[in-house]
Image 1: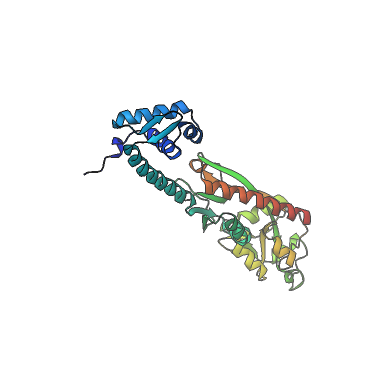
Image 2: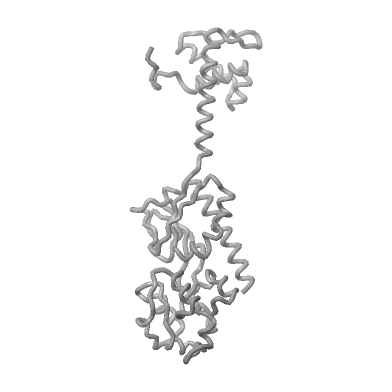
Length: 307
């Protein structure tokens, strides 16, 4: 015998009302479990009986008893609803991938060392990281969210500032004392290699402009593709790099890097947590965003108290 099509089945509300009443042998208790009135359960069962052209209950004074047809249907429905509940539970508990595109310096220097904290809280959310100096383009890239740097506001994308970028010149301690031109003040930068994290020299140009330092020959510096490479070169003593005050705090605290010029950092923008508006209900995006902001707030607060 061919199986009936889904659209040939009776009303799901009627089937659920009957299954609950059959399990509890009470319209009143069924109504309480389903959070409806006793009359609503009774009507749903009567409509089901009419549609199937069978009697499912013997209705006795203050009691219900299943007919033979009722017992047959109740047994099948109990297995069916259990199977549906099991499927929903598996769906809720399945591991969810969260695909993120992140600025590499932020990923290397802050997020990756702390990512285990998020995974211990949400083991069902598997974070997949892609690092790039290019901000995520949700219109053509398949990412759930991103941690971006600077950039313009984009229609259809929500972005929340998570960290203020504050750039300051940093170098290895030996550059301050060694060589023919110790790094004692801003004018001495003319005798040292400037380490750039982009081919347009924009960070050093912004620093010179905001601090009023003139005469720097930016083109003679060494160019790297990402901030972290420039900072690693500075740690190795190859020159002077611009580092975000928060993201190089460990190197400054350990003495691997120093800020030799005694000048306040310049403000150049923000890091943002960004996601497309159609992902606003995503549990992974919501949980990661909440964790990111709360953990960063604690880190920044601790950093500022040390400063």
